[in-house]
Image (cartoon, rainbow, N blue to C red; front, side, top):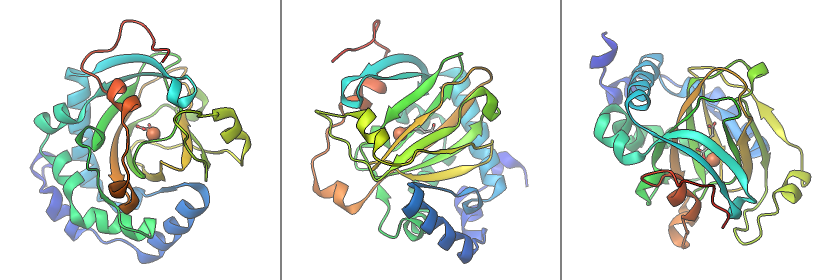
Length: 253
Ligand SMILES: O=C(O)CCC(=O)C(=O)O
Ligand SMILES: [Fe+2]
């Protein structure tokens, strides 16, 4: 089948997922705060999503060079394409995001309901690291889950791998990142194009190691847990991060 005429939902429905792999991913998520899920969607669908992401990031996107007090001034140096631009320029990505079938699989891995993010800007965003030193520095996310699709990635000797510390808590007024780093082991994982992973992003401190060469492009799909729908969540870091234009100078507050 021609990649561009794939019906994303039909391809997901036809895709067989191994229950033993799902069970293993569930254990890994609980233990390490993230789990590789490259088997969860068909290769055809990955190819179409990759094509759309590369089209979007080639023609749009805003460079960011920011630091956020709420995450202890860790750096964000990257190019982003925001949710609305993705929704306008892609039909497959919104359909995949909204797929109940995909959420059911993620729910199986999470061991609790994985729900659409009620705050639209955090539903999906494309991030590209493209200059030496580009990084998505240490942070937590506002919502409980992230499904990250790796589209492009340098070899690990050039950075771009993921590091995380599970079972840590984000206090936005007092982030104390170094204390969180000291609270338990840091796990590192390298991913290749075509990989996907699910992370428990609200209680797993995480970052992408700065790159020294190459390009790293991902799309992050954010999902909520039931508890996210019951509490008030502020979105200051993400609002600034995904703002229309990048501020001229790094933020210090
Ligand atoms: O690029 C990644 O692998 C993680 C992205 C991330 O942490 C985020 O978008 O919040
Ligand atoms: Fe994140």
